[in-house]
Each structure stands twice: as structure tokens, then as C-alpha cells.
Amino acid sequence: MRETVHAPENTEALVSVVMATYNEPPEIVGTAIKSILDQTYDDIELLIYDDSTDSGTIAAIDAFADNRAVRISRSRERRGLARSLNCGLTEAAGELIARMDGDDIAYPDRIEKQVAFLKDHRGVSVVGGQLCVIDNTGTEIGRRRYPPGGVRLSLFSAVRNPLAHPAVMMRRELVDAGFRYDESLRMSEDLDLWLRLMNRGYKLANLREAVLAYRVGDDFAEKRTKRAQIEYMAMVRRRNFNGRYPIRSALSCAAGWMFLHAPVRLIQKAYKSENGQN
Image (cartoon, rainbow, N blue to C red; front, side, top):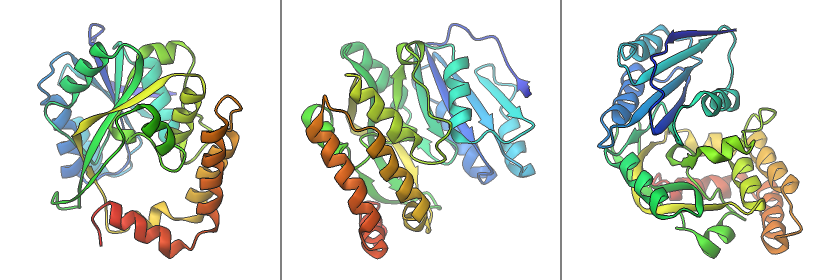
């Protein structure tokens, strides 16, 4: 049973931003929310699905409850990421739906640039962007780059996630076509969705400029190389094998197998290098 703390009527919002939160430090989640509300693009609603148990985090989120653009939803039982995001996809009013995490910072023109891109590229269904990587203090420590689209993105998806999940914007038509996150997955739910979309012929793309400051903690590499994380990623790649795209699918499955059998220290080193943590 869902409790809605604040649900203003804002059915005209072109862009719905869906944020799932869970016990982020109060000052960090507050900064994340403010970065969406301070966008240069005005036609926005922000849907926050909060699983937090920390009173400071809850208070920091509720501080925005009087903003007419904000809707805060809580459940008596923890929903988890995939279910929270699916609630957002279902309840979003906008024709475009963007993702945002509670510990990142959206650049002021992120939404404006992604809306313009999707208007100019009608054949693209989901657009992401490049990332500036920051540490817990907000200091830039690196950049993460994603291919803009086409063959490069397709091949990249065979070995890595082709989109930065908290930086994506998608068309509502995907939701109307029945696409959702798989709630049976505790991890890699975003990779699974992107691979399913690509297998159905939908096009993904990335802006060439950074749209988000992506926060990584000191233990980021260790979290990403936990056995369960790697097993979920490999499983998602195996189950999304598609005979219409045999080369990409075979490479994807091979990459999953390699991650399963590669030394953990080597994978951790690669993650740290990618995020400027060496």
C-alpha cells in the first residue's frame, strides 16, 4: 500500500524525472534534487520514490514537498530500485521520462539538451550522455565516456553498459509498448532493459557532452566486482542472446563469461582507472 506525501496535479509536464532514493546523506540528496529543480528547462515534474529509513534523509527530501513540481512517494515496505522505477514509469505524466539518482548532480542544461536531441532525432528512443566522475566531496576525479550511437554503441554494449543509467532520458512510447525494468533482477536491471530494447530494434544514443556529475565512493570498485554483481551481469547477457544479432550477442555472452572468470583484482583495477581512482 503506497503512501503519497505530496502529489500535486501537474499533468502538463513534458519531462518526468524519476528518482529512487535510499538513505543518501541529507546534504547530498538535497543537492541532487535541487539540481533537477534548477534546470534551464522548466517543463518538469520530479517523482521521488523514497525507501529511506534515515530520518535525516527523509527530512531532506520532505523539505521539497511544497514545490509543485515535486511528488514524493513512500511505501510501508521497501520497494527496491527496479520496482520504484517501474512505479515512476507508470505514474509519469511526461511524454519524455528521465532518470536521476539521489547522489548525483545534473548539469543545469542536461534536460534541455536531451529534449532538444530527442526532438531532432526522432528515430532514437533513449539518450544518455557523458559523465563527470566526482568523489564524496564533490571533487572531479575523472570522466566516463560512452559512444554516441550506431555501430560503436552496439559493439560497446557487448562488453559494457552502453548508457549511464542515471543520465538517461527515454520516450514514453517505450512504456506504452510494455517495456519495464525486470523486478526479478536485484542488479543489472538497466543493462537488461537496454539489451531488450536493442534486440527489438530500438535505437540508443549518447550526447557527446557531459550531462551529469556521477558520484563514486571509495568502495565503488569493490561493490561493482562483488560476485553477485558479476553473476547477474553475465546472466543478463546470456538471456538476451538474440539470433537477429548473432555477432553482438555472442560477444556479449563471451564478455559475461570473461568477467566471471577474470581475476577480481584486475576488474577492480579497470573500474578504478575508468573512474579516475588510481
